[in-house]
Length: 382
Image (cartoon, rainbow, N blue to C red; front, side, top):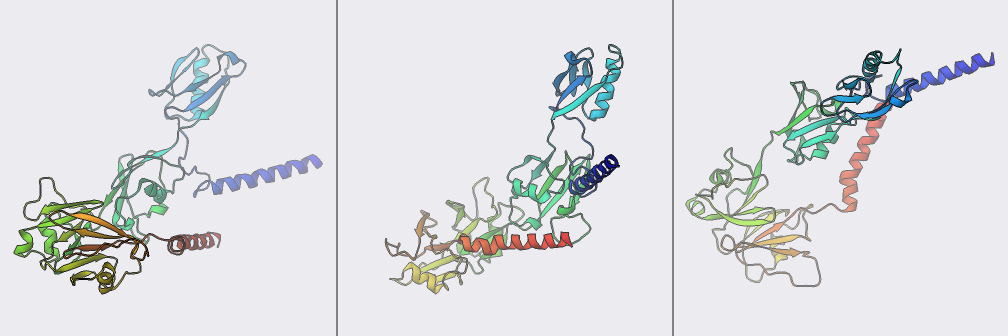
């Protein structure tokens, strides 16, 4: 009676464990989250032994030709087979040399499932697939080239069949990225379908952020968007600011190979010699008359002061463009020591976006993540 009760509890515990692992290993009960059935890959390693014939047992590695070598039967093709199929094949082949051989096979090193990510990303290449529902995590690792995720399109190619996948949160006809089940060997193509734009600033009627023309070398087309195609502007040069690089470009005849890139800043030389341009994160960017004796802080105050995101500690001045363009790093305007550069007619004052402080990072970045995690946890547990 006692023995029967022990078997009963042992069976009950085993059943509970099986249910737990089958439901927690993937979204489909009993299905491996990455591969439904594991099949042998190149560089897999396995330990093979034959009962009663320990002398022929050994550890083998699957070669690039898909074969393994084993005593008495030489080369055996195993690529793409399950361990059960390999064991049966070995027993049949060894039966010509050993009476009723019993083969044991133990995997000692597994192939790591991978997907390949290509397209508008910073780091194309293979990525390890540890969870079949990890599309967003993979795209984060590969780093999208453009900032807005929902302006990208994703196509997953599997066995020659292409499946579009939506990166938008709203429901639609396409499967959503967080619900799409990836499999080993998938190829993820990422393309950008948003608006690629550049800044046109300086002495133009309508400064702003405008789409780059389809012909990315068409500088005049971009200036036309800002209504800056009068004869004086067209016949001169603009200043191109790209990252830390500053250079001049003729409007009519840009150099061979020139093309506009996302987030380029095009500065148009002021027609009025006695003016100063204020750009970036101020409340009223624009062109303002230069008055002798004005300080840099005076000019920014006239431009409405720093916006909420304006970095008062990283102000820059672009000076002497287009003749000898240079950038002056002003630094912190609120400092009490050290000279603050004087402003000159024709200067372009740039106020960049400030970096998030620890407090702002928590409020703007971390807190929403925690909130979303709590919401998701509640939904899953309801």
